[in-house]
Length: 423
Ligand SMILES: Cc1cc2nc3c(=O)[nH]c(=O)nc-3n(C[C@H](O)[C@H](O)[C@H](O)COP(=O)(O)OP(=O)(O)OC[C@H]3O[C@@H](n4cnc5c(N)ncnc54)[C@H](O)[C@@H]3O)c2cc1C
Image (cartoon, helix red, strand yellow):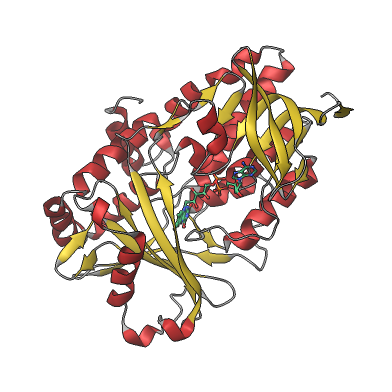
């Protein structure tokens, strides 16, 4: 693909690349990696400098592990903590549910701080040939005749701005996604949004090789539609967090901090999760779910990850979907460039809908249902104690399936998802 050329203009500097990827989170790094792997000239911009924190639970299901493996990441590296499945707590039961054994996905998950993890992915993209520019932000899109053809960029915190012109732009700038917002990508308020908060602790008790999840989150006598988690890190710390959905009746009156505090109060005192063992502050962020951003592409720009709202509504998992959508965007852009048919890349929203539309539709229904405390209570009282049901739920909610060619649970999942429209 074309060589980068730097052109100096009278007022600022202009650089030309094939693809400009804005944001080096998992979505942007995956897009940049898969583009660079095809030999495409790609510039990956990141406004912060690595290593940098990102508020997250740091947990990867087998779906996330697979996305990592597709980037050639060695998942046996010491920084990763392997997890066998989910240990689920409720007032009535504690269940250990190993990840399913499937053809398409590994049977383990991972935990790693985003401080390490995101840098690792950005370096993978760099190693594949992408140019990574840290400490630089995209401040405005460049649009000509309705086609996004680059962005105005400048050093984070100020300095001289420059133009980067590109044949395609990938907006991977996370949940706030100001870049995509400037070309008309909007939040669809009929679709769900989560809020969540997390804090690290040097706790005395380690959960072992499990992602621990509390499915019923109690604030006094009221049950909240969300979940609490405690995930083990390789360095012995734990990531403790809690999240809530905006389908909850009282969502507007509840902050992520309050959900977190309610959850922290639920943990047994002798687990050592308290002020004394805390490492850093409670930090929170939004989870844009079920493709709650629209459109996911405008001419010349494809939107991936949180910027496109592709977090799984069932479980709040966003890393895997950011990486997958980044790869889908990369493949379509590659096709469009190689065949010299720019319109091919604009099929991206249709491909996303095809991939996630039906499943996310069911997920959106699910979160609307559990927003009703009576339904949530029925689920936790009668559903959670049924181990067979929870094994199926683990697959369903993790979107872990071999599809129609799989076993009876896969076929049931396929049949249920097929009933939904691909929207
Ligand atoms: C509390 C919490 C817990 C979570 N827990 C989990 C979990 O355990 N597992 C899971 O899978 N998901 C989890 N998620 C969701 C997950 O964090 C996101 O879905 C995921 O980070 C999305 O990746 P992304 O690449 O789309 O965006 P981000 O990770 O947000 O990356 C966007 C990047 O773009 C950069 N950027 C932004 N604007 C610009 C600009 N203008 N110019 C240049 N760079 C820019 C940012 O600095 C950032 O590095 C959680 C979310 C929250 C809030």
